[in-house]
Amino acid sequence: MADVIITFKLMPTSPEVDLEGVKSKAKEAIAAFGGEVGKEKIEPVAFGLNALILVFVMDENKGSTEELEAQITNLEGVNSVECIDVRRAVG
Image (tube, rainbow, N blue to C red; front, side):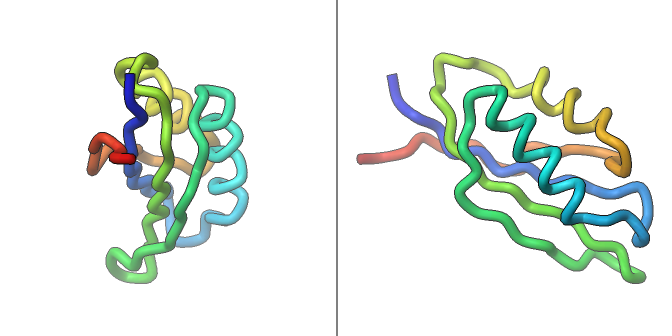
């Protein structure tokens, strides 16, 4: 089977949340799930609130990312996780 490239958008509970700490814990959860984060960025949302965008690669045999999304949502400081893009890797 092929690899898939998945993009998650993590929203913090408030503008005061340490996004570096959240990023570190989320990357650990993704690695434990079998993914490898390749790209990360902080995207301004509104009123000082920033979203954390994580792009990672995983084997499509893993199936759905719902379990991983639930794990990351349960991290301290995370309000929500949204899978905003899924595509097959070519090459």
